[in-house]
Image 1 (cartoon, rainbow, N blue to C red):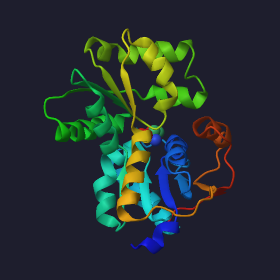
Image 2 (cartoon, rainbow, N blue to C red):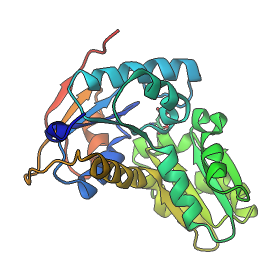
Image 3 (spheres, rainbow, N blue to C red):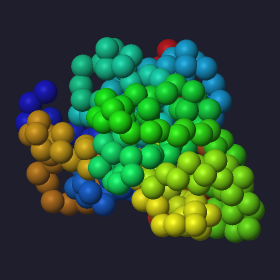
Length: 271
Ligand code: DGL
């Protein structure tokens, strides 16, 4: 790929709408990049599916973006990043960034007592991807990982800062409080919205790492290193493609993105 490709869009995909938390971070960190987003709303959730199925879906999602002439692919979905990133890199010849490495890097940097908690979907936690990434960076860190799948449904329902969210957070996170973690890695697209509720259940202030935000910083660094940063100084629109226009996508989307979704199209996936 050459500098001539710099004007091409960045492709971002997720199992559904949650990946818009990553798009929101990208808009902040790389305001002049055009973004093409693909959300697999017809087949969400990925987090409860097998690695084989998630990998097969992720390959189709990435191919869809490649057909839209993207210069880079960001795998915003933690479940897909956990199990399919290597396969994606083997298949496609362009820069592909997952959320795991950037999140792990930031967590290792943030911890003082070397006790890091990781929460995510079943697929993400069972894969052990975050533990491996953290250990590669620092061997003497204790990682306490816990699946917290109900958090996804709570956020989609809009219940991320109420009594129910707090109760669920208490139940899920009490083992991590006992383990005296000082840093918590949010290993799922939906969890940044629960930041406040999560912090409230910890007796001491902890460092909360938003892997999506770290991924946006990583994308910026890679684009700069590759000479692929867009030089145009106008704020381009985002193109959204969804595999199903579900009844509540625009309401949930606004929650994740902070603004309403314009330019949404229904997409059919390549075989
Ligand atoms: N986007 C998924 C993730 O970050 C959460 C929703 C799902 O299970 O598909 O793991």
